[in-house]
Length: 463
Ligand SMILES: Cc1cc2nc3c(=O)[nH]c(=O)nc-3n(C[C@H](O)[C@H](O)[C@H](O)COP(=O)(O)OP(=O)(O)OC[C@H]3O[C@@H](n4cnc5c(N)ncnc54)[C@H](O)[C@@H]3O)c2cc1C
Image (tube, rainbow, N blue to C red; front, side):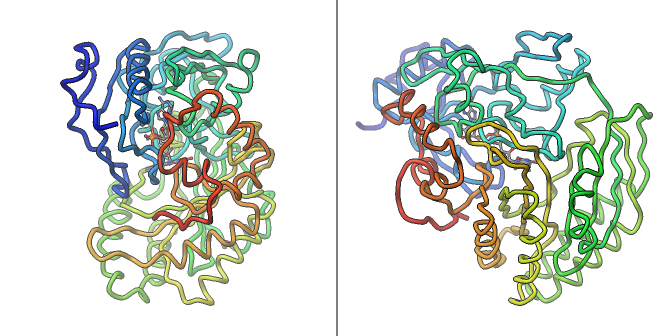
């Protein structure tokens, strides 16, 4: 089957299609040029795009805002983006539930929820992503008693490979619901979701420096020391910062380093210095210590509406890797990582970000069936001369595997179907639902074939 040309489309499809589009993810690590991009505004238009792909036997891949650091959302065939389907459909303030079109961004979701006195109970570091995108990868925030974002889904609707509209919930099309709460985009185009929120709230966040060894020795208490706790460890040092946030009725306020200081020093000066360390990596530990002393010598205290406290600036371009392990194993795993870095004279950038997620029953959630600690490592990714990070990544992934680690689906990793089958009890049930809904593989792409579908050999991490 040759490429499908724009001028072969019906006028109806031409109105929502373009053949001049290159998709690139946020980190600029992957890109692809699909034959056609569809940007529907209605479910009927989504159905038409699906039926066209079906009739021409073309792959059709949905993407949200392209924030996945891997090639999870890429496809050389047809692509579809439902950003224009971003309306609030209904809200029930009594049950704190809202039904939205799945192309809505999290930023807009916060706004429409707040207008109705509601807010999401937990969030990750940013809110640029689409609702469909965060749910497709079981994106997460932090909080011992709070599950990943997919646990907030009450019901959802998707357009499947035969063009039909399928509603699913815990009581209707139950297996599809369980699979589609974290679907990797492999089951169909998700067009709407009902989400469980809670009454709008403010958070008070307090950020304080600690000795990392003390935190590891007092692990359980640290995890439970706030509704939402996270740790940033500065490798090459025994320093870390613990961020704790709790619901509050206090007035909006902020103390600690000024925004200017954080922005100027924490971003521009730090980035300039990181550039210098590209030519002399032995300076990295000194830079880490300097940044810790400058930015974290005094506690930071902030009260604001919940989403503003949950979200952070993700400042500079970076390579990221993030896996989930049982939180009781995390101190051992982190000590091993520290040992590897020191014994192998690796020079790595900070921070290592450590977050906690309650166990859930979402089939493909990395927190399925166990209380989870996400450990995220980063390396600065300058333009031009690359920084060496692969030895760090390999050691990190090997340690995560020792603890039956599950990689964040959105991030590049080296797990194969065999590994994933072994660590997800419901993995094969997910594959059965996928096969039923999409027997010809319309929604598959290289990422899914490489990691999820092919029985194949171990794959190297793609970054
Ligand atoms: C700066 C930054 C900060 C981040 N912070 C966090 C964090 O704190 N916690 C965390 O867990 N993750 C985090 N992530 C990862 C991010 O949440 C995920 O990559 C998320 O999937 C991105 O959503 P998106 O809308 O960009 O989706 P995309 O990356 O565009 O797509 C992701 C997946 O969703 C599928 N998809 C998109 N739309 C649909 C649809 N309508 N129907 C079916 N499938 C669909 C795609 O096919 C793909 O499989 C971060 C990423 C970045 C770049």
